[in-house]
Image 1 (cartoon, helix red, strand yellow):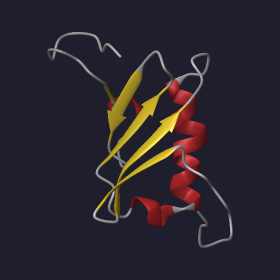
Image 2 (tube, one colour):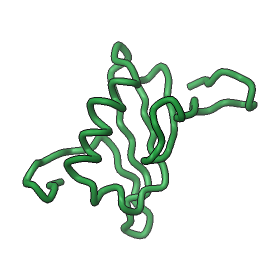
Image 3 (cartoon, helix red, strand yellow):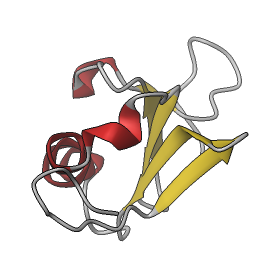
Amino acid sequence: MSGPNGHRRRPDIVGFVDGLPLMFVELKRPDKSLRRAYDDNFKDYMDTIPHLFQFNAFVVLGNGIEAKVGSISAKYEHFSDWKRLAEGEKGVV
């Protein structure tokens, strides 16, 4: 995928519904932090290929051990743990 300034990027997973990119997933190795996925990858994609996020509904960050979900406008601190069984429980992937 190319951005308006000619940068080429290849996201890990983009979920399309009726041709609209509604879900963005950034995956890291288990030894890499989700914060790194947010800071180094997701934010870079937002800057270089912003048209990918015009219709985006949610973002998933995962590393095989933990995962978080949030919106494109959420700061990392506002991403929620994925797959919680109850609101008060810690996430389980």
